Length: 299
Image (cartoon, rainbow, N blue to C red; front, top):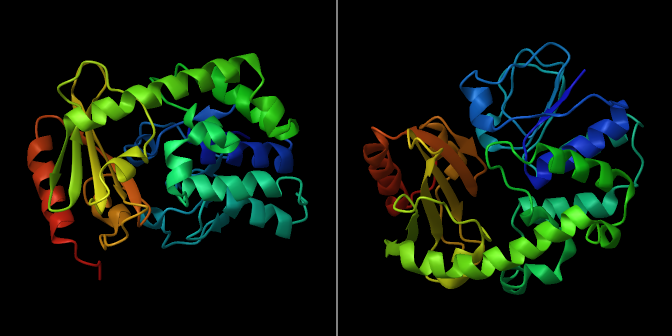
């Protein structure tokens, strides 16, 4: 039996809960949603999937993304909830396998994954331990697998103030604070406004800058949503798109998860992503932007 989840804060917390409830000690299998959708990820009978699209091979499945809403019966739990971890937590509390030891962790995971942040939290994440910790989780070609596993082990038994003092974590937190400061300059240089949508195109850069994904909402307060475009991988054979509704200017009506599901991706109503073929990406991006500009509520 394996835990299969996504390398973001929600996925890491899902792994914490599943290890606790199911007493699983095998290596965690980390995959991105697109790898499930394309069939690239090898899902085997007995796997427990969390925070990922459904696979008929798995034994249990947990998720909360509207674009992944199931039509057929399955084992596990699905709900349109702030986080997948919250769905997992509720399931195992009802089954008596987890008590309330992770209440604080789940509360912060819900806030982070649902982007229920205020402007101070966005501008000064270093003052909020869980938010800062979540920003240390980045996927650069799966080179951080040991770190993700380390975080799972820490979150299972260590208080947040002690986690931030862990040498590996502290180095990454310091790096995040530095990156966030530099990221603001990159956003200002490579972002344009069109129909109240902020469009950030990093394809001109050889190295895609990392930084606070909510920062654009405070830098461009007139925007109702942000679109970020960058190449996926060094060969530039794919283009990655991330879209989010502004968490401060709430006039965006587009269901982003459903929109990006039309292009092989998915997500929540308020945020999502997809991977496009670089050869046809510009045409697809034009179609995506036309829908965003129209700002019509999904039927």
